[in-house]
Length: 91
Image (cartoon, rainbow, N blue to C red):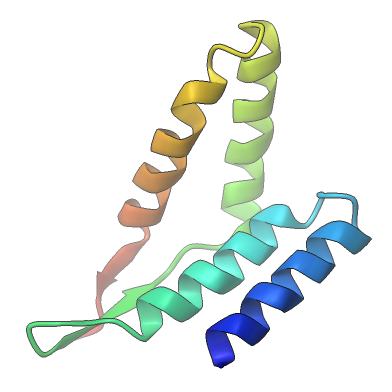
């Protein structure tokens, strides 16, 4: 139920701010998912911050515009790399 609530809150924040706070909503939902994940008895911790994702998001947006949308195919991969880079074991 908490994940559903965080997802709805993230969606509402994104809609109300016309997408400007989308990186914050992503960090909020990613953080909940990662912080509630245990692998082989070890809890994960998400250290990503919305401000660093926002900078990347602007860069990816500009690259997508410059390449006439072609870079858009790699945005998902870049986002996943960022998420993995900011995930570590809590202990």
